[in-house]
Amino acid sequence: MAKLRVGVVSPERELWSGEADMVIAKTIDGEIGIMPQHAPVLGVLVEGGVLTVKRGGGEPDLVAAVHGGFLSVANNEVSILAEVAELGSEVDVARAKNALDRAQASVEVGQESADAAADAKRARARLRAAGEEVG
Image (cartoon, rainbow, N blue to C red; front, top):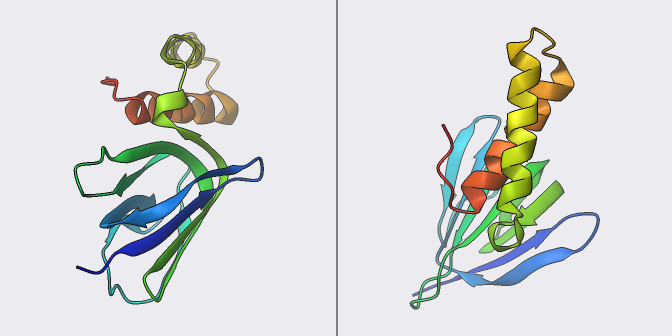
């Protein structure tokens, strides 16, 4: 079976590269699933999205919180160029929960701002990437 060659990078570092059976990402046009032989595509990743790379062969899925950037697909190669990204396995769950609580508290006291909404979105994505249920 054909495989995808996948690279996930942010300005700070390369998060992961390798072969995969499928990539699932959330773009501004909706969620997209990419399998081998997918048509060429260029997509804009949403702020506060979660990227899933299904590696197959019994390996666990790679999950990352991705905050903006681009996705490019061509010739069985998928490039994820994220503005900010963090692997789910690297998320400090307590810190992410604390950030979500702070952002929600700002909303509850009527001090909602674009920054508080963005902070809440990022915290939720980080928690989902870490496998935590988010209400």
